[in-house]
Length: 103
Image 1 (cartoon, rainbow, N blue to C red):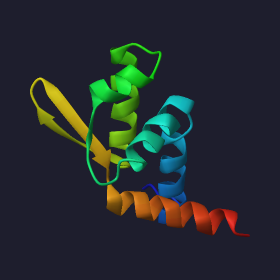
Image 2 (image 1 turned 180 degrees about the vertical axis):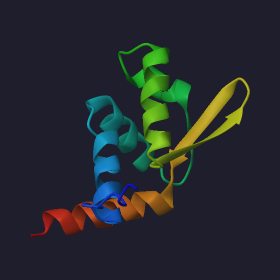
Image 3 (image 1 turned 180 degrees about the horizontal axis):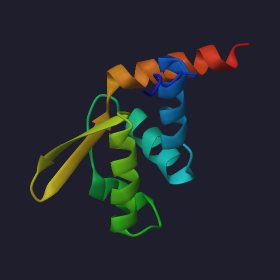
């Protein structure tokens, strides 16, 4: 009989680590800055591609990581994809980082 696995990390610690992983690359920080500066509207991935010296496939991978972490959301309207900040998770991430760093 196996014993239940002991949990060492709180849910907030796991969430913070997930958000930290998502923002651990300068391109993803750029994307979040770009989208946060345009909070009133969503932006097409092509708009960001024009601002960055990377391949569109690389940009797509970075967008996938941010979307998977819940920091952004996308709306597919072929052939375009619009992205914007996921405001609920954005606020949660800001709160978790603030709590972590305020000590």
